[in-house]
Length: 364
Image (cartoon, rainbow, N blue to C red; front, side, top):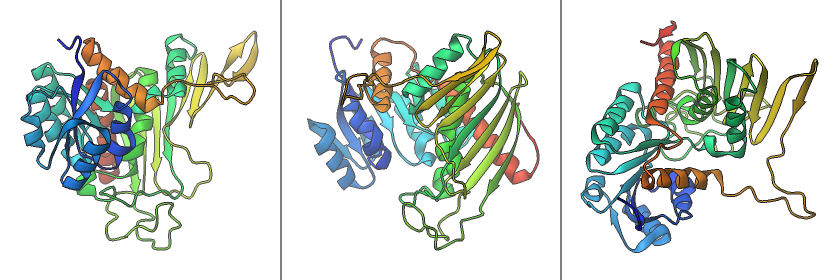
């Protein structure tokens, strides 16, 4: 169907994540071209079109007008979380394949609508969990597939910042985003952990969420002091998740915790044969060999020549974009399946609900 042609891509939402990840990554994928840009602030769409679009690229304020163009094959949804679900559903119904930025939706009900729309229309849907494409993430996944860890029964999904609260856009607005660091950066760590474990059957969870720092004014925040009146999401949240097979996952997320050893999109995995961890871009593997404990850190660079650190290939965001576009052309599964992303959203929702009620949250 797509043989010999470039996929025509429309971008809905031309803000930070579109400029920081989606558009520059797609620009490096020769099998596609960006032909339409939509944003509520028309100047953003115009600037994006000029920088990343084809000569005849069109700009819109209303995303439904963009979807009315039947020549568009693919849509990337890069809006605040609240709009993910209804825009994605509309795009699928319009006959487009959809890459939606993480999280899938603000709650499982909205995420389920997206999943059902993809099944109903037969169009592909994926979610922007690019941590799977890092060298470290790929290495750990392949080790898990090779049986290095055995059965993984305990894991930590870690996304902790010391003082790095995003103060721009709507990050602090609960109505627009559905939550704070848990749904923003904790979602990456949780997705990575579940993917490596290949375990998508949660049984129950317990969660806590804190507004411990929201009211502070002299914050030493990396992005400048936040406005306490606008800070309506949590500043940190934690969850303890028990899976149907008995495995447990600790989820740790914060934008501003008073802790020195902070990392994002990281995962620690403990199995019956060995363990592994991804801390930032480094991997460590541990186990038993010849009756002795061992641990090692693989060299994820390809250097070895003086004054040259090596070339790891594409940036992981470009890899994400390329595998997504090629999955459409070749009619194969994308790396991130919507069914998997749906489970991530269910667990995030469970942690929030447990934190609100003070009770254990059981998954149906």
